[in-house]
Length: 175
Image 1 (cartoon, rainbow, N blue to C red):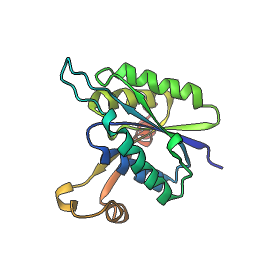
Image 2: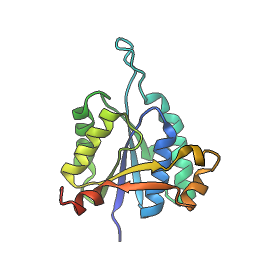
Image 3: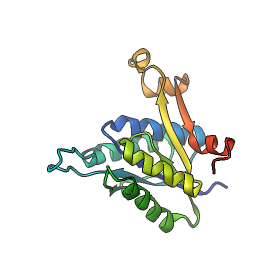
């Protein structure tokens, strides 16, 4: 029996990137997701940075719809937001490490770097590499060609690539 999965994802300015990647990684790898952590940032008016926390509620609802469609027993309480310093990869790394230390016993940690800003995703990627966690990146091929297709159509017809970064590492002995 597979271990239950704790799914951690970075959040940038495109909420659909988080939803699409969650959909495809859970569906393709049949991940039994138990809990989701969204790594978001706050606004920093002093420096003129718009944070990503504003997407939390929308993402939670969207992920709940995906979970229902895929038969995952997730509730609102199972999807949490953790605030990170978006320009500090160490903040992201440390936040994921805290999740790992709290949940690693009996659970598998999966990290998704698709939706985050560059520094957020780099911190998450480094954590996944250091701790041997599954790591995903979702990439749509030619979005102009596929813009009128629904997510279901794209996923069914494989007009996307779900990059399993953890498999790339193993194949190149980078772990």
